[in-house]
Length: 222
Figure 1 (cartoon, rainbow, N blue to C red):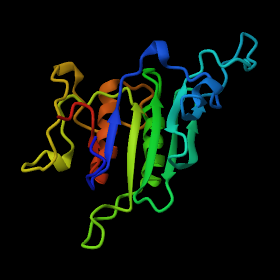
Figure 2 (figure 1 turned 90 degrees about the vertical axis):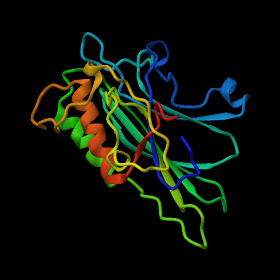
Figure 3 (figure 1 turned 45 degrees about the vertical axis):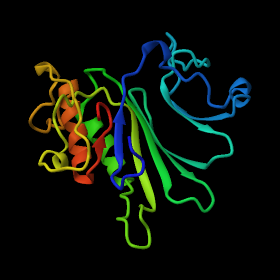
Figure 4 (figure 1 turned 120 degrees about the vertical axis):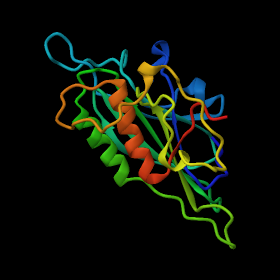
């Protein structure tokens, strides 16, 4: 990801199941001693066999943003803290430093029973809160702010290119995607009434979100 470009960047990543649970809603002292601060959202507590929420953080998923101490003033807007998806946007400001940086962290469960309609609603919310960068000018060679999306989308985009990159020439380096035929996004937008989902359908929903905003997938970019 090149944060000096005027085009925002979307980055997805695989989650390591051994490290998928941020176990705290505060910054532990041993982390503070290393100079970092945690900003965390978590899914609701799991329920026990009686249907009551547990009081331990073990097994809770979520999204965590680590920021170096005394570098940015951080404000947080939580969009979702559901069992199967979480999303929050952090705005980073540093005095007279321009641009401001907005980072939206999110997680979408790979559960095939997660309805397409809920994922579409998630992206509709993110669409409402997207902050497009202002174009550079002779007075400002960079935008006033940038918006970055990062997290685990559990979506297959294969070698599909974003619409604004599909027609050369482009100054943006090409992305090397997954060429496996069974890892390509489906051609059409999935029916929102469908009660199941899959990585191919999620890939199409992700691309449908990225394309109108000229967002770029950072994974696999050279």
